Amino acid sequence: MESKYTDCYRICLECLEACNSCYDACLKEEDVKMMAGCIRLDRECADICAYTAQAISRNSPFIEDIMSLCATICERCAEECEKHDHDHCKRCAEVCFKCAALCREMTAA
Image (cartoon, rainbow, N blue to C red; front, side, top):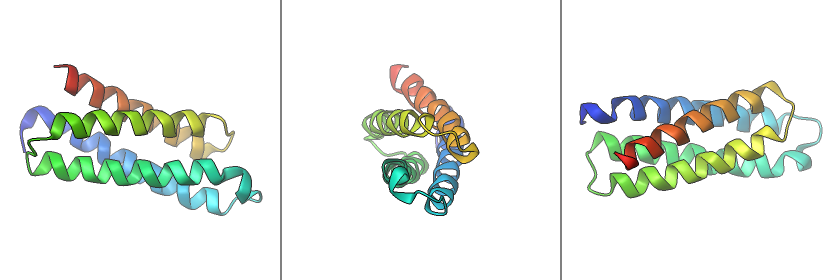
């Protein structure tokens, strides 16, 4: 793994964890239907973060494209999580925005 991607690798794993935690907590909310969009985006975001971390670890030739897609999905997940007042959603949004920003920064370099 190239050292220039180390921080991005770490934030992708942190985002994966935050999204999985949010996903699990959303399923336990009283009004699960209201959380459907959040749950769906948590899954999408966790999956792309896992894939991005894998791509970084194997030095994929498509890393910039993958990071760009990861940033887009993380932004969408963060925007959805921001709509909810739950602590798990706030935490997820914060980490998703950080991950998106770092992925964008890496692809702009």
